[in-house]
Image 1 (cartoon, helix red, strand yellow):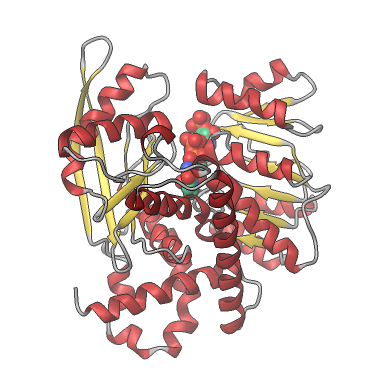
Image 2 (tube, helix red, strand yellow):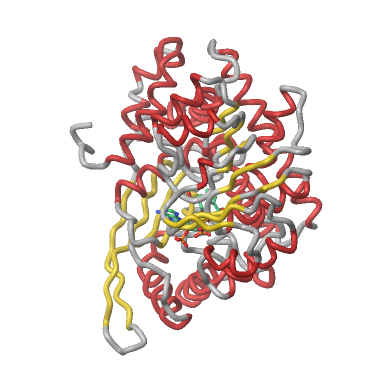
Length: 435
Ligand code: NDP
């Protein structure tokens, strides 16, 4: 705390994990002897750099770039790149720290990292985004590599940005390798990667419901965000017979009581991914829906909630409101969307609560599958990747559930996920000696 006092998001993520690891630390004295926790909260390396670029008016702009290489005990650093004006070291350290546990949970050999910039892609032309991505990669390329550190997308970084960054990496390094994931299909991308995080959050929730002997048929669901994760979360919910009734962005949310079906979702995908418009435009096209400015969708009566926008987007009072309205399940597509107060409400009320590091691990798991395909120089079919994704989400669910039972808090997925993710990394760190 003394060293990171001003990094509120990072401290929030670390406290949540450390509190739940107590039963393991008590049972395993070697954790303390080897100072595993003290080492795990310190990133192996942080790179910070200037990103100068020229805007359409010919003026030079400057942003700040980061890569946090958090932990490489079980594989090369792996984690997304975020472009958002709020990006700072605290946010990237929280995301990198979470990523270490998440990647371990996937059962694939990936360490944890995260990067990004305070660049705001909103309102920028394609040319500006390209010049920015090229400048970022001109510095970053010397720190990453297919066996060193493999970045991917996150908020503000989708297929377009990955394409520009990959192109510049290839040019500078003079090699064609799987150094980034989330690539386009024509140059090494994997089928199902765009869908994987949203689908995965729904698959995880299905596994939680199955423990209770239930399924998604007939359930009404609130989804927040309207980007990559939210879109495919809605798609999978609809396919499984549920009704997704909300979407949002940083300005407000829409509520469509009839459900956002495949046709309406196609409109949203065009609006957000091609036209880069705002979610408020939904109600112009579908007037039976309503738009509420300046609010989040947690006051709507639903059975399940899927926060898929950003960190700390469910407050304690919003969690109370969800529970009061009959919500029984929360599956986090986003990273740390629930505040500590909200988590307390969910646990107190025995809500089926899936923390992001377990529920949204499908994205990075499929990135891991993209890396395997790149190394083998082949590509798997859509169905093959989807089957593997479903298998991985079931494993993560079962491992988290088993760990929660073993350590005396059956059904507490937050505790189970933290412990299951932690043990593999801790054992590898002990084996590697003092590094
Ligand atoms: P996108 O950029 O595609 O979409 C982000 C969405 O969230 C947009 O609708 C955006 O609205 C909204 N949003 C962003 N910041 C805020 C904010 N401060 N307040 C309210 N709304 C906000 O990102 P993704 O869908 O990829 O990521 C969403 C979440 O999922 C993030 O937490 C990310 O870390 C997590 N995640 C993503 C993975 C992936 O594979 N992409 C993998 C695992 C986790 P607006 O347009 O107004 O900014």
